[in-house]
Length: 225
Image: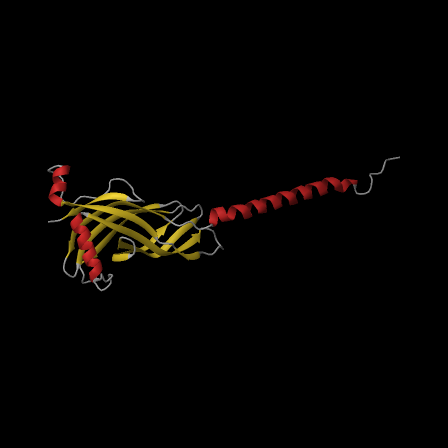
């Protein structure tokens, strides 16, 4: 006479398998929950000032005249987010909070881990309607510092950024980037003296800074006479 299998004994392996799968799914979902902020939490773009060319810097009776040509590198450090901005605003500040000149970079897009070099140009003649108004006391202060041969500027970047996830069904997110500021301590030298220091074949317009800078830097301002 054949022995009978105890009731429910045949269901034990199935219960074990289902329980194992349930535990595995739970662990997987929990791991995804922990990793999503790491992958999708927006990180601000990294901005570095590579070099800067300053020419025609003049402090007149009622106007400040200057031309700034800069090369910056913008890097997207996000693992799964692309960065989109309609307008990146760059400004030259004197000392801490006195804007001297503004410019913008339009339609900047950076995909995951993408790095891009961007050129910016600031032009100040005192006649632009879209540039900051420089008050007379500040003009005199700049003129005084100019005569002493040392000035302190700041380059500030700000933007409204939209982060996009390269995955169907997931929506983007728009944030305002905290201003990124780079301090520049500038020593003023005569352009001809600078040319002699660098050799007779050197141009009087010289690029400031030979290596990437994102902190306090000592720079040479070339004065175009």
